[in-house]
Length: 188
Ligand code: IMP
Ligand code: MG
Image 1 (cartoon, helix red, strand yellow):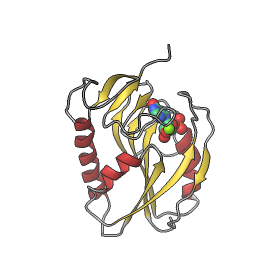
Image 2: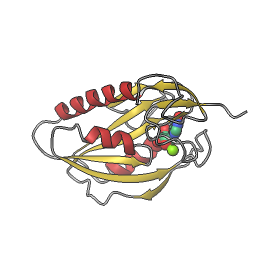
Image 3: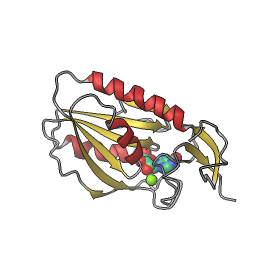
Image 4: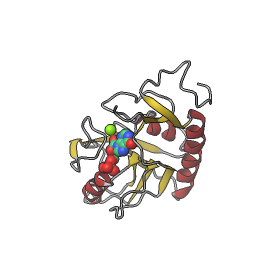
């Protein structure tokens, strides 16, 4: 993948208006985040890295491969948006992690924090399981929510207030495979 912001060529970004973050920019920031997370925990206890599916799957895969310490991986699934581009305010839990959280250092991996509904709904559920610590690492943060139950300790990028796709983020399940992050064309 070239570092160009041009959508033409190898990748079909059909429906994408402009490239907001190139694959190269994302990779550089993910490496920094992995380095910071690796250094943030004393000792050699495993981190339980908990990916919020589906949007975090590419970010998580890139991140965990650069964590230089023992890691456990699990996932949870919450559905909030359906096919739309505006938060419905509802979050459904469809899958829970099998790994026990109790006594573990847990990092929740989010693709993007938008209204904050997902985080505000999930954090109490996770805290109830008595992890030793709980932090959030979000690739993108729109900085819209006045009050989050837990502010992400690590944020990849502040995001523009547009609907973004690619690098795991979808619109109606499309665009997740794009190696860059782009903004979607507004519906005509
Ligand atoms: P929140 O609950 O409003 O904070 O939204 C969080 C979830 O909504 C994210 O995990 C994404 O799955 C989805 N989402 C929010 N904004 C966007 C966006 O710009 N593009 C794609 N998905 C988004
Ligand atoms: Mg989504």
